[in-house]
Amino acid sequence: MLRISSPLPEARLAAVVSFAGGGVDLHCHSNASDGVLTPAQVVARARQNGVRLLALTDHDTLAGLDEAFASARAHHGLRLLAGVEISASFCDASVHIVGLDVDADNATLRAGLQRVREGRAKRAERIAAAIEAALGVRGALAGAMRFAQNPAVVGRAHFARWMVEQGFGQDETAVFQHYLNPGKPGYVAHDWASVPDAVAWIQRAGGVPVLAHPGRLRLGQKERDALFRTFAGAGGAAVEVVCSAHDDKATRRFARLAHGLRWQASVGSDFHAPGKARFDLGTCPPLPPGQRPIWTHWLEE
Ligand code: AMP
Ligand code: MN
Ligand code: MN
Ligand code: MN
Image (cartoon, rainbow, N blue to C red; front, side, top):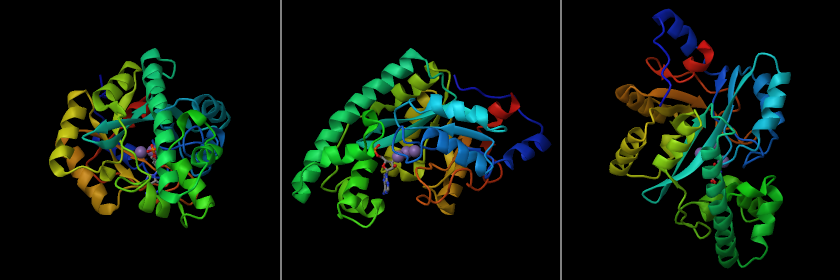
């Protein structure tokens, strides 16, 4: 079940809401998945940027958490939540579901993630074959693996870094645009976890599921509504409202949606590397007024 904290008095609520931007960051990556900093470096950078509540949410793995917690203990004033970002599929689109404050030892969650990683490894072989055929090159998988600190979570970002190194594009964004996005020659369709499974694994591990960066969904309006219903039907009731993928218009749009559904709203930079995304660690703007911030639960403890 989603943890709902008891309602806060208005004044207290206002204080907690203004805590966002600078204080809270509930979505980021280390080199345990496709970020470039070590977990310890992520924590240190977050603290440097004034973060007081951080969740490390690597793709499909909990492998960075031990190092991150060791580092968090050395950084006074920073509370770290064990997090994960699970790759799921819905109507042929990929959907990312963040789990916050999970029990990293939970067997159900661990087994689910293990299965997703196995699929990810097989997908990498198919991506490599597609890139090699499209570009007339060899060694794509070995090349991507050189950029993957955790070989169990090799992904498109690692291929992109290798392709930039090989001169196939100016930067990762260009390479994604030309080769790795859906419909491009290096893209391969893949069945990730189902949305209900991803939500269930997070909840079995005592965590809170959050629908990540909905502005990035490659779904039509009808399918998107169906996704929201599926997520809610599985027990999900939180969505990222402020994140690097959302411009101000998207933020307002998903804030309205969260408000209408009475869902909790999250804030996360989705930080992968310095200088890459719109917001660095802990530098997201606050939630728009009237939102129910998801982090009241952890700040009230
Ligand atoms: P994967 O889970 O292997 O399919 O890779 C998804 C990841 O690729 C995202 O989490 C981002 O880190 C990265 N990514 C997706 N789209 C882009 C883009 N247009 N430019 C740069 N990185 C991207
Ligand atoms: Mn990523
Ligand atoms: Mn994502
Ligand atoms: Mn992410």
